[in-house]
Length: 116
Image (cartoon, rainbow, N blue to C red; front, top):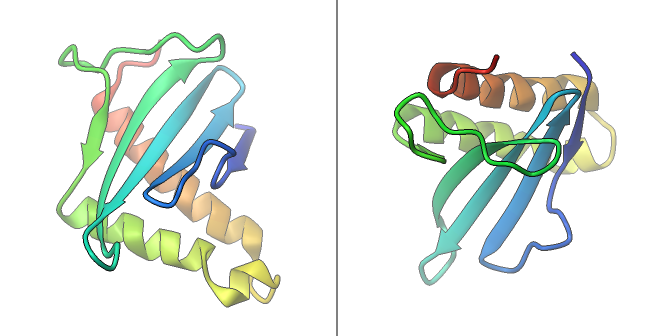
């Protein structure tokens, strides 16, 4: 499946960071909200939209998913790779790092949404 990963889109601010993964049939909007004195605390939410920006409801009727517990730790580890010196300077395989991040998010989407 083809995808386009956009990290830190133009709407991002110091406390809010927006990432988007666009597939052929839908897109996933990811919001990282940082707070606290050193901006170390983080809350991560995502929602699935159609390509014409209509929000897709989850199986339970809600609109978004909050990443928490072990999944939040995994997300932070994957994100640290994408923010690393090695990633930015092409010292590691960027395609593999991108795929790990996308596959993790896709796993969460499959667990929470019915995509027909």
